[in-house]
Length: 161
Image (tube, rainbow, N blue to C red; front, side, top):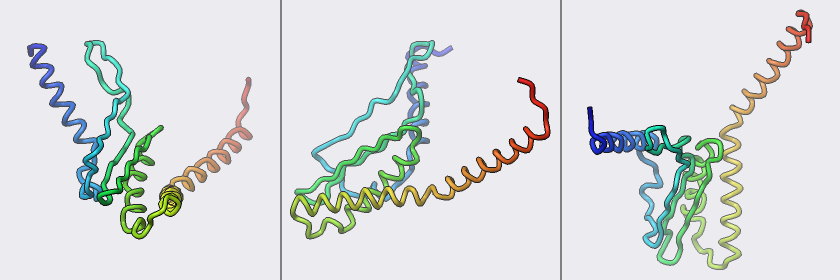
């Protein structure tokens, strides 16, 4: 039977494996220069287990980045996953591409930079909706099929309420 200290080591090893499994192995943004003037930290939604140890109540869904564009320009983003990590994963990968791959070149005024940011948000949103169009169409198709089958079932069966 392991001691509490040994159990703690096993538990932390398992936690590290779980975190490694959840995180993507490599992203193109891993090669961008990180802003040395900042850091991003998270406190996940935790609850206590019956044995007193803490664990996450649900998988971690938020994403963030902090990049250095040049010596005077830094770019930060925090994306809340809300009901899953699909949108936050997509946005945290796409937003840097929309802003850091030359779109800021020659932009010096606040208004010009603001316009680049505005266009980037619109482009990321449009791209995300395009990426889920097939899923939304499939969902609507299933909903319509269920309505037809339910109508048929209700018309051929007697219900007593």
